[in-house]
Image (tube, rainbow, N blue to C red; front, side, top):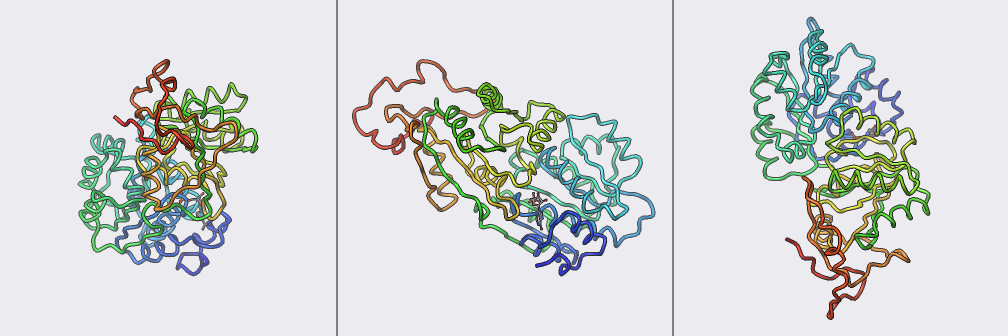
Length: 421
Ligand code: AMP
């Protein structure tokens, strides 16, 4: 369906055209008319489906209806991360370039004074992460009393990140009479509860089946020993001549270490994670987009919402603990109809995580063994640890390989029971 069939105004259609988009994506086709009608919407869509434009375009059009006597915050978009906030604000500016609205983006980790100065001048749209927005509310440097439209973007992730109380506090600062849009990739009980509290008889849109990745993504699993993952990754990048690769690790420490190791293998790499400053993260992202950095290593939270067009390769250096994160991760590739490749390097420790992902996807992922990197069947599974300074036990214990197991152990290092804690 073409954009001009959706009831959008000429200013917005012009901006869409300047973005180079021809057809509206399914979420845009469904959401835009519903939001324009003015009712609440509950939408299930992941990144990569064009969801940002699906709420941004009609949001801007709704603002066009009102009179702009005095600038007041009339639309509020809440996002889980700073990166996503910055990207949504960029989209609003892009699509709203022929309209008179002003947008402010508000998140922590940067000076609050610059934000206060911007807010003082008057803005129509605010895109914010919940924590910093609350700071502004407490300091009375923002007035949300005129908000007509609220968007919760990636609501599932906001709940995962523990923002529920902050969100509820923000709600108290909003007028009761308003339009609400809730976007979420998954629908847990908690999301349903939030939706029930927040939305008034919402229209529901579901784009992909819960947890189903976009079409156009080829997925493959390469079984490999944990100690040889880095070597295999460098090998694949070099041999296949991948020019732009987003690699996921489970921990910040792991992301740093891997980026350094890849550098020493001669691959320009950078790491982004929560311990890096906002400017360092944005600089890494810019260099990656510009092709100066070939491999960007990221943790799940840091990568959330990253908008990198036509990203061809996503690598799970380590599988995520939460199966849904696999879908989010690989959603970075094959965006908006492009082809993409999702590669998972899976060692014997991750057998159970892989099973969880396959259960969510309701399919078995294709497995291929790379010659020279066949897993050593003598290596035993070890517990998979998670962030916060927990590291794998290193050194001798790890090569428990030495202890031969008599039974089993055939095949590719799969099919044995991992020793989960
Ligand atoms: P999103 O799901 O909002 O993160 O968007 C994913 C990507 O698709 C972004 O890079 C958008 O610029 C792009 N995009 C959004 N809508 C369209 C469209 N109708 N046609 C082509 N690309 C689009």
